[in-house]
Length: 302
Image (cartoon, rainbow, N blue to C red; front, top):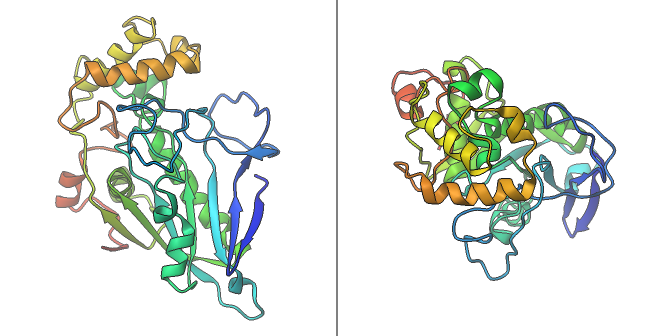
């Protein structure tokens, strides 16, 4: 990843950039030379391509290849003898189906957060995949692909912070993850990963207005399996659950089917897809796991 660094008064903004022609990897992550600005997550959500209706916020429909981050660091972090700064990592909301690291304008960017802290912290925001690109689940997905891909995307962001934040005078031992709505829910899924046996890679968190899709039936023919087959039919792959067929579907057809899925699937929440029980990362729903004590208990919470 080759960053572009811009100066904003007391702030250094490092914007992620991306390769012009990224390699076709078997897994949707890897390393390559960066040459241009990054895309946003590829989605076509309910309510159109700008569901928040924010006048000054343009909608984006780009590519699945969106796993990039923005890094905001106060200039004073680079002064002689400056102590490493604590870090806020922002996980955006959007019902797991829309949003990006730049969603909401200045409200959710590092500029406002750092100003409010009097430039005593750094700030990171990264994309994760949304909609059907991330949350198709069920028994077939568990054996042939990766359910809950968006959680792995978020974990990759936390791993990047752990491995590299010291290079910009950040303190990897003082990482606080904040999230709103789906972002707040995501944080709780990291706490219950593998029944709490995995280090979530942050020391404190603030989960604002978390909510959950009641997606726990991952048996053959269950709700998750049904949603997968409905989507497969929408892209003309039939109900035989062929991952290979889905991989060959054009981005335009995927986006159109992603939109139609909202019209055909009624869940307990607002949207048809989101994090689901997969027998590995998510073994039960977060409220139950938290009540049973199956979570990483070494974090401070708000």
